Image 1: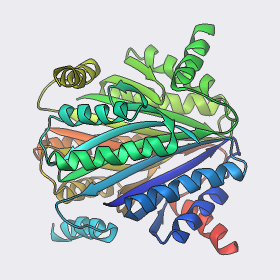
Image 2: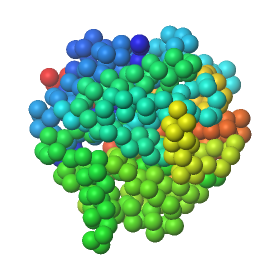
Image 3: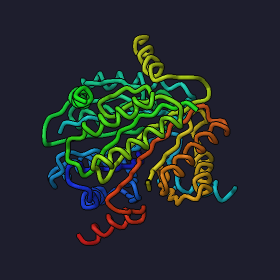
Length: 101
Length: 101
Length: 101
Length: 101
C-alpha cells in the first residue's frame, strides 16, 4: 500500500531551535530511499507504508538519542485505491485548476 | 517504545456519514489489545509503537475494503523518555492545575 | 457558522512540563463561554466560529505573556451545513454503531 | 501577531476529486494578500493573525457555497516572539543544517 505522509516532528525540552532535529529526520527519511519534499511546516514523504513508518519510528528513536526527552509529531496520512497519485500529481492537479480559472 | 497517538481517520468518497468507518477502526484498535478513548474528533490510543502502527495500517486496509477509495488520516504522536506517562496522566495533570488555580 | 475544533497547543522553549500552559488555555476557552472537553491530546471546543477563533488567539497571546517564546498549535476544524451536530452527537454516533455490531 | 499556518482543507461529501476546492481556497488566500506556498498536503500561509484567520473562515464559507456539506480542516499554527521568522527562513534553516553535515 502506497502512502503519502506529511510529517512535522517537534522535539520538546531542547529549546526553541529545532532545525538540527528536523535535519536529522530528513537524513533518515532520505536514507530509507523515500522521496521527500521539505516545506515550511513539515516534510512530505512518499513510499510504501511499511518503509515510511519504519523510517518515522527511527526519527523518534534518533531524536531521543540526540537528547530530546519528549517528541510531539503530527502527520497527515493519505492512501487511495482508486488510482495512483504522487505528491507531484497532487500539486499539479491544484495548479491546473488555478491556471484554468 | 511506548507511544500515545490521537488518530482521526476520514474516508473520502463515501458520503458525509463517517461513523460506520470510525466504529470499524475502533474495533480494530481494541482487538489489537490497545487502550483507546474515543472523543469528538478522534481516538486516543496508547501502547507499544509497533502494535499501535500495525493496527493503524489495518484500519486503512479495512476502510479501503469497506469501499472507501481514499482515506485522509491525521495523527498526533507523542513519545517521551524522561518518564512514563499514560493518557490518564496527561488529563489529570491539566485538571490538577485547573483545580489549584 | 458553528464550528467544532480540536486544539492542541504546544509551547516550545519552556521545558517538558506543558500542563500549566494547557490549563491556562482551558480557562480562556471556558471564560469565552465555549463548551470544552479536555482529552489526552487536546481539547475539543464547540461554538460560533468567531468566538472560538478569538479565544484561540487569546490562548497564543497569553502563552507568549507567560513566557513561551514559540508556540506550535495543531487543530482539526469541522463545519457542516447539512445538519446541526454537537460534539456529543459525534461520539454517540460512533458508540451507537459499535453497540449495534 | 505574525503567524505561519499550514492548512489542509478537505471537503467531505463531494466525491474524491478535491482539487477544485483546494484551488478555490488558494485563490481566497492570495486575494487576501497573503503569501502562500502550495505543497502536496496543504498550503503554507504567512501573515497577520487576523488576516489569515479571516481568509480561512472565507474558505469554509466558500466551500459550503460550492456545495460541500461538510468540511474537515487541519492546521499547524506557529507564532513566536523571540524573533521574526518567515516560511523561507524555516526551510533555509533546515537546508543549511543538511548542507553542513
